[in-house]
Length: 244
Ligand code: PEP
Ligand code: MN
Image (spheres, rainbow, N blue to C red):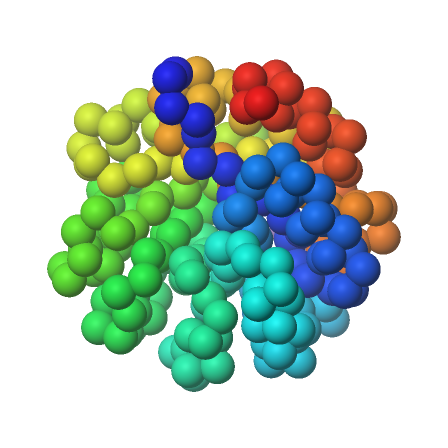
């Protein structure tokens, strides 16, 4: 690979200012400017931390003024659009909303900003590409695809990964779309120990970039700490992929 892969990185969610700011600082030091800013979190359980939501809009907006970075943030609902649009640069539509066609149509109609569309955990490749077509109706080449693991029979076993990394799908997608293809080894595996190897495999197979969860003190993160790299592990990944 001659061109550097696109790296989108950051904590799963913004939970404390300290974790977010200290993570941002090391990412910017590594020249990574596309930052995960998880504010509205789609959690399986209503009892889990749901993200700071609107409470953190002002914090992110102000931080962006002093420390410019590219905000990649998941939108769960059309009703959040007006508040988020003042500081979001790339809208993420997560796995659970891949087939929320109203949300896709809404974004297609209301923004020219790029949208990063994750694959639904049970979506076929054709269904995924059709969902991406909703976004492309008005803005071809302004969409990023992001594979993040799928649900297969592996997950009936207690020793399985959180999802099955759909690595080979990079090859089939490349045959069927010119859109950039990112790979998320964090949600694919659910375990920080597997992230670096799966990330490298994705690049070998031709992924254009990676979305990685990394933060300061992942062991105390309120969401997905078990699959998040600490700074040292993230640094190691960048070395392994010759990012520097
Ligand atoms: C995320 O990236 O924060 C996320 C929730 O991922 P996914 O939609 O792939 O589960
Ligand atoms: Mn996460």
